[in-house]
Image 1: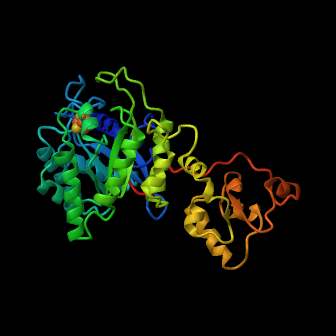
Image 2: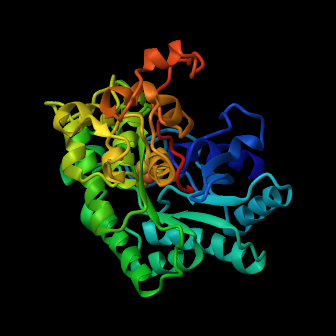
Image 3: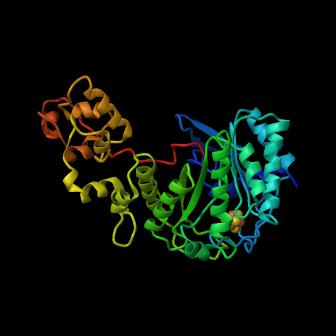
Length: 396
Ligand code: SF4
């Protein structure tokens, strides 16, 4: 079998696993279409070669391009072959790291052994010391999980759905507790024993909207995973129907829903809002508003917290103001040590989205937005919104 043919198929099928934002469109010419961009925790980003070891799968996940019943050509890489392909891309400086995932060929542990062998060849034969994100297959043995943790920078087990009931709608073969949560716990325990393992931590991914779950279901489980498993982060992937699957006629999930989940997750994970506060963003049916960002909804439901005094508010109080994020809150706290703040134009320089923040803040001598413009302190501004979190923030 021609390696190029396998590469085309197995890289294309890997696009459903999220590991960061896809900077390169799928229609780009080969080999660029195999490359995905992921953000680094300390800034900057890395180019990852994202690929499946095999698109053969014994599972029947109803949304998946590789489910067993789907009539399509099936391919598999040999570990040697895949390691060689990666090293060629790496030597050409097209990629800096690998994201290796897979269908479940015969059984989870056997396929994982092949994935681990691939990574061992990279680490030992080719002495590749760069970034590797290894997908752990649901149902794989403890030995496989441990071996993967010893080789990879980051590992992940995809949870796909937030509860047993929702997962049962997606797959007859996946077991939330034994197949998914138990391996996550193993990773946590291994890391607790040896801190040097999986330095970029473990992540997971939800398919959003395929199982009729609400945003509350997803956020509750996400919060529990942050708390109980020390999950580094969750990814959310809006469901898209795929021809030839049981859900081919189902309606796609609006990308805006995925984006709102990232924003709510950002409040939990980066802003440190307690879950009970993030829940305020949910409507009667347990979903986030598609038209308003969750932080704005939360602020409107807690009017007694505002306006906050910019010159006196704590960092946590500042963080609750729409238009003020962690960076701008820190800048405000820092600037106050040297001088007081008296104008919106000062806040704008600290990266505050003043159009959003103005109704929620107050300071001595504060000039209104309109007055500042009249006095020409500020240039005419284009429409602004609080910077929206993207998949950036941690490497795939
Ligand atoms: S386990 Fe499910 S989601 Fe993963 S490749 Fe197989 S069918 Fe697709």
